[in-house]
Amino acid sequence: MFRRLFRNAARKFGARYDYDVGYMEDLAELSPGGFAKLALLTPFTQERFGVPAAPYYAAKFIAARTAGCGPCAMLVVRMAEEAGVSAQQLASIARPGSADADMRLAADYATAVLANSFDLADMIETARYRFGEKGLWGLASAVAAGQFYPTLKRGVGAALSCDLLPAEFREVA
Image 1 (cartoon, rainbow, N blue to C red):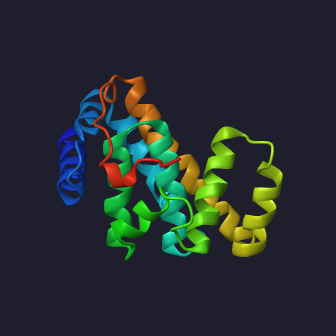
Image 2: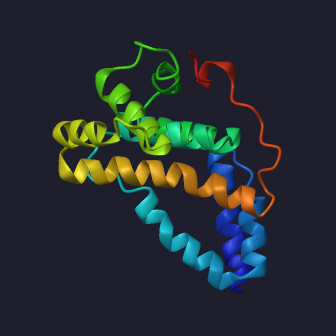
């Protein structure tokens, strides 16, 4: 009973976002309890902690793109569009100087976190100053969520040959 319920929930999610949920269906079949526990993570991975949608999704997109899973990154784009952030806004963070200041800060913050860069402490303080303590948690959760699902998929073999992102979303040096 739970297997079917969870598979149907996964399929509904996949249809909503035009996203391959085969790995979720596999988990529902293999371990309904594991699927339920993964589902419990979802509210946290979608919590913005007061950060406006555009910078939140900028950080999440950078994390998913860095993880190397095109479908996961495009899922973030679709979720961002649902939250009122256009695909063009997210694509703008791929081009230096073209994103708005909050999105640029969030994207740079995500890049610094993922690279554990030498300027990470400064980026954290800048993000904290701009978005507040709660907002810093929102950006951190966006980065973690953007990495979590592609990493999980890759670990079970569901993301070994991810599609490339459309050109407008690829990083431009």
